[in-house]
Image (cartoon, rainbow, N blue to C red):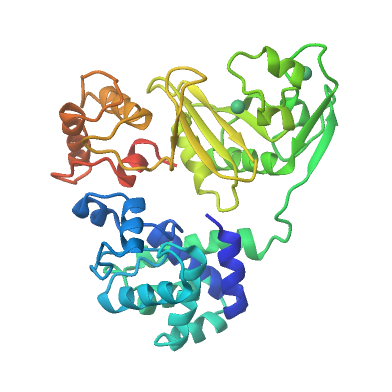
Length: 387
Ligand SMILES: [Zn+2]
Ligand SMILES: [Zn+2]
């Protein structure tokens, strides 16, 4: 995700933060701001992942004009998808290229959606801009009050993050071990101190890390405990399972326990923060919420799930990835444990989604009014591990 890039590009054209954020809130609602996102029902219908779809369209082996929503704005109609494909060809980029898609949005606004562009340039609130995008640009089936409000809210959050704050790049500072310095409303420097004894005297802490932890604290409203913040190289070498290049040794990482909140919920929340760039590792081994979440602000995004110990993990695309019959891996174990705790599944926690797990998923969906739905999609994640 590169909210900042999208924001900058749209600002260059629209030159009004209300308009840009009203539009971006809609893009987030449509695609979670992922330019390779194929509408979920399309994934199911075609039986392929987003990555496979993009590869097939790029190689010319799949017809892109298929009335299935795709990309940042979830373009769907034949006319718009055909234009997007032409545009990508002219650009010489993949159909999933983010920058190309933003330019295509600008192209559309200037050709056929001039009234929308005018509104975005002149809107005096995010809501005003967002409502116009819903009704005249995205035109989802449901344009009711709750949809309008939800989209405006997403836009407002982006506005609060990008339009009102100037400092985006954080800073690394070094604090004295054992001397408490108040870093933010709820965090002191000593909470990040190395757990080793007599091994070090200073604690480096990156401001972006404090920022994300404070966001977690504010969101859940309960205490956030650091199992581990900084680890000096001497101590790191003694910690079993610790990477030799651990970001804990650089002051960029912490392992946190949020009181009474399942690690999966914490991870899923951090993932939604527009300016978060780093690794999120979920350590979870039951459905009671035991475990912790590793968060670091290294600057590049990665996600991982650990389900038994501290060294074996699966790299995942995110914490709302769909699970369905045939899926394998640790995210499947998380789902199996959830289903088991609800009495919807009593097979093995083996990370293989077979008939039994699929039956449990169907029961879970049925409980939420989705009859015959056999896959565990973003809605299920949200219901099982709400943020
Ligand atoms: Zn130390
Ligand atoms: Zn860690």
